[in-house]
Image (cartoon, rainbow, N blue to C red):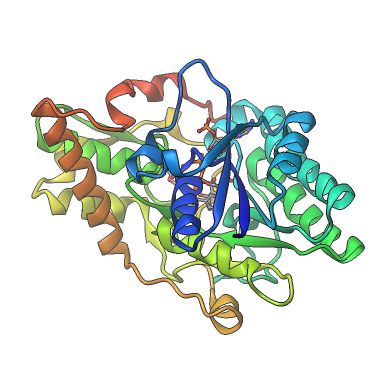
Length: 348
Ligand code: NAP
Ligand code: G4F
């Protein structure tokens, strides 16, 4: 039986990847952060918590990563752990660099010294393109990061490539464009919108306050993107691949589509607040996935409208069930409505 180690198993992608690999017959080990309140809701939601083995790891702590790799002796390592929220990286730039940049390098070093034949997947990102020099973006488009998150991810991207070329390691980058699902964290714009739309429809919330409505993103469906991660590691030759849908939609379009699905007029409920603007944003991302389609055989399936519907339906059902007194693994009921007040960034 193949063994896979997933760092960041409690996150959106980690949970979907754990489920996917279990279905493929893998023995799955997942790292989690030791915190005062357990955070296993996604693994419970997908009914995989009792089917995987969890190991406490902090990406800042070399010893805990070394122990995880030694104990699990995996054939494949998927490095998904990260401070993944771009906005927060402006408030915590050094922590983000430590986790997202140095963290990946710690694993690469451990693999280099311990067992160079371990296949390594690095969760790289379309944020690397920042102010993009061309559209759509491909594997050869210039990187021009616009946030401390992206600059930290640039380090892990480059070290993954460098360790592949310098030491002959099977180390690959997936340059994934935004991918979303009902398991998306509450602070990201898609889930913030779909959760708010559900609550407004049910009379639980009065308004939705957003930042930059003009930003354009290439949004795909997360379960399809974790399959791409696995496919990348099954190739004969290690390489880097863009994963994207090739479609751009503005945040404003997402708002309109989500409100349309519940027959409400966004004009009545949505306002913008400049304190939610980032000090520097990425205005437009759109990926060209032709390389991964040609070489690996992966392509996206779920359309933008289908994705928004999946997320709105899921959040609506959760709040309806909650109002009926049902309890189930879920994040939103513990998420304060005024959380944005705590996370405001100041644009100079
Ligand atoms: P996510 O939901 O935020 O999950 C991040 C995971 O990293 C969580 O399990 C989190 O643990 C863990 N983590 C955070 N800090 C850590 C630390 N110091 N030590 C150990 N673990 C830590 O992110 P995601 O959306 O699943 O994304 C997965 C990866 O893909 C991330 O590296 C992200 O940067 C990258 N990525 C995501 C997208 C996207 O659109 N989703 C696109 C491109 C790249 P807790 O649960 O305890 O917080
Ligand atoms: O949903 P977001 O926070 O995602 P962002 O910044 O694109 O980052 C996500 O995708 C990356 C891949 O490209 C990942 F690497 C990263 O880990 C993460 O998963 O913001 C999307 C856009 C931004 O332009 C933001 O300014 O939405 C805009 N936006 C407008 N109002 C907002 C809001 N974003 C958030 N989070 N909250 C708002 O109220």
